[in-house]
Length: 306
Image (tube, rainbow, N blue to C red; front, top):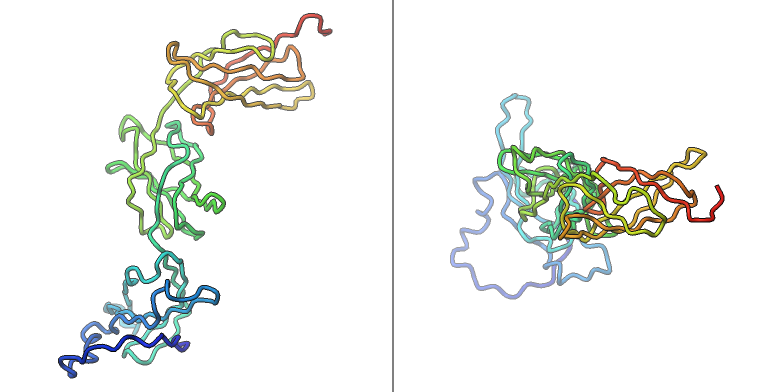
């Protein structure tokens, strides 16, 4: 193996009570005692590449095939790395002295932190694009999200959004009647070790039934009626108009929940197509528009030539 980095001189240690016990730490487990041969990361300047050599005990599992192979199992030492992710090349020794390269690498990292979901609710049909805000995320091939409640659990792939220190995933469809409306979301970098922050994602359904008035000039205040509406800071209304050339033009405006009427208010945007018929859809989470569309007609201002 590559030579270990020489550590700073340790403080003088008290004499061992029994010199005969030295070297017995690795006996009986087929490995070697845990030994850290460099100071903690905080004491190492980060201007140069950091080298850490670790010796950890391994448990040898029997080889039932009789081919001379076998399995070694080991545990990464706790708090060895601090908050700095690292990648280790693995070497194996059966006698604690001589080792062989395996050609394998192992990545270790600090505890993952989940702070919030954005948005934290979506339609039960699934499809909401969610960001998991937190810390210590990095890119791997096994980035995963688990959505679970009781015995129900769904695993979906995730991607890294490094700009926002977040993971991104698409919320799966969820049976609200059978499994409840507020499952827990946890994340994993290797598909095996999961966070335990108990961050909830809520499934809420809404539907648009009418736009009042059904026609008006651009700039008019519109009132949207439907079901499942509630107060949200992320309400948006989308207007889609098809031009005479068949091109679909889209404009999205902010909406406001009117609690006393259980309705959503918005302003009709301006299009360069007087008299155009628009398809209107509603999003309460600012990301996912419920597919039920209602029509709205843009009136032509008086004196406008047809």
